[in-house]
Image 1 (cartoon, rainbow, N blue to C red):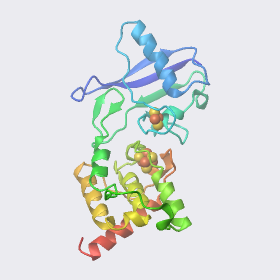
Image 2 (image 1 turned 30 degrees about the vertical axis):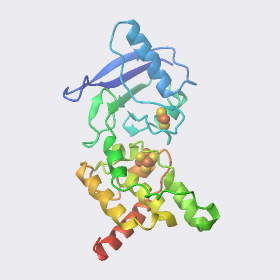
Image 3 (image 1 turned 90 degrees about the horizontal axis):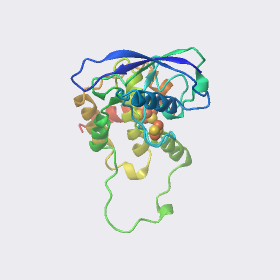
Image 4 (image 1 turned 90 degrees about the vertical axis):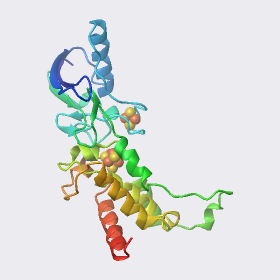
Length: 247
Ligand code: SF4
Ligand code: FES
């Protein structure tokens, strides 16, 4: 495949940045999107030009490290992570536009790499269960209804990639936060800290500069783990309960 790539280049946080155009030839449709960028970087390196900075780690759809806006869609035309997107989703002669996640809370570090530590700080505000020291309790001593454990597992699949934020017109982190809240709220172990968790995580979300959820649904549509929108309803119910109880 021969392709034209329009790629966002930005040397650092203070640089205004701009789109740059590159031609690339002979890309296999079996290669992944990131392998295609690796080939481009090898060519740039050989020409003595600065390679394009982009994030990745596992390249198996597990870690949540990769993330590009491809032709205006977070993670590109397939509902998967950028690292699991393959060039067979494109056609010979295509022009592909590649940008970083766009959100005030995700400042660009360089080129296509953004700082997503705001999501870590939301987790630090309450996305955990405090564990007392001692031996692990016998697993069957805490029964969990099957439908609750299934929903908790679905919510726990969130890998923290931030595509939901990039896709949302308000740059809201509501789907991410609601996935964490729902995962913990549905388990008996998560109940004691449930309401303070909701309030603290949402306060942190606001503090980081993420927008408000207006139920557009773009977040769930691009989510590589298909976190359903109803986790947001779960979070809102818990928030209502917290307000009623004065938490
Ligand atoms: S909810 Fe989905 S899109 Fe958002 S961070 Fe989690 S896995 Fe990524
Ligand atoms: S690099 Fe780990 S999910 Fe894409």
